[in-house]
Image 1: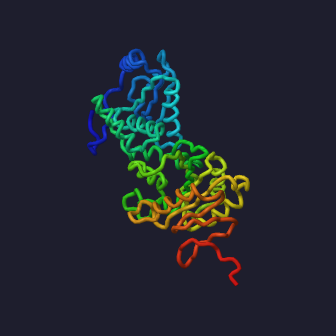
Image 2: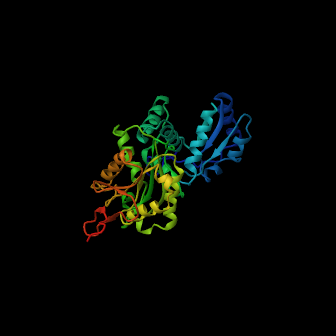
Image 3: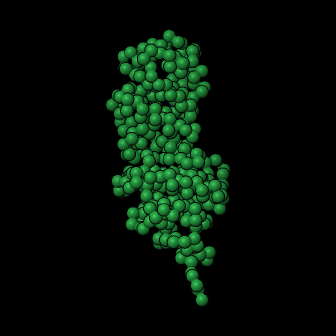
Length: 351
């Protein structure tokens, strides 16, 4: 196998196409000897051309093979669900599944770690470490890494409503993310100057807390409805937030949002959410004036404040920021002071 220019990423050798006889011998071994029933193929479209005959067809037509799932690209919006469902279906049916890529070192390892993380609710780092340790015991190379898993999970943020974890039960927490300063990150393009909205900050913050066992055992989901600066939010974006609140079975909800129009969204939710739902759910809205990616940021403090508030506040809408929790009993109750930049109750009848 030749080596990729960065010396750490193997690439598929570019020899003659694998013969159909070699593929059938391989299938004989996996299906006949190892009792493999299902296949999850992680090959790229280019890699399917490395075979004398269509590789996926050979798998599908081989006697004894059940399901063959093909995932070309981790970053497609439906990849996460396809990966998890393919493995979970085999596990539930007590059928063995082979996860196949060109070298078996990175993609298959990443998917294995992803399934462990999603199924057993351990941290991404712990899942990655388990796969690496298992590979060492078998004397095979497995190279999953934390960033690969974040990329796989992060691919789902482009969908209108993207869930980043297992569904929250009624006593869990649903995090609804919209972008804003809290999710901004340094640009990935060399020479770029403007910040871009990255993966939800709450995903990384919870992951860090899980790694040091510093967060309570509650189930949760992270639902991304958009990735925008709050000044760019449209009516349809805010309607998507309302819909996410309605759809979740959780009564504890935390919304991360840009600070510029945070109050506008709180008012919109109050005016558009059915009052019967408003009486059942505890909705906490928070944000940050500096991105969570910064070494000095109010994001961890504000998310911590929101986490504490969501368990003890009464039903309704609350804004948790600047060390305060402010309840929105009616639209316009909470405003941002344009002089101090802090959030506060609007003065009523000032004379």
